[in-house]
Image 1 (cartoon, rainbow, N blue to C red):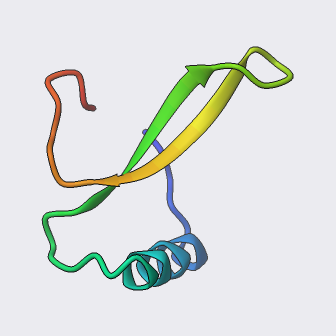
Image 2 (spheres, rainbow, N blue to C red):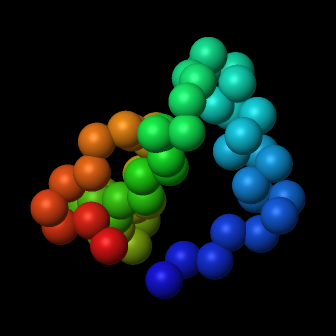
Length: 55
């Protein structure tokens, strides 16, 4: 489970507005991909389509 602080929620809401994304069906997708100094990097995107492996 990922905990999102109130401050982070305000930031994400602001980013949604900046991107002109409207509607409650969008959410923040957090992914881990190969790359970066430790071999893993985090990827953050907005999405409105749930995938079978989502948790």
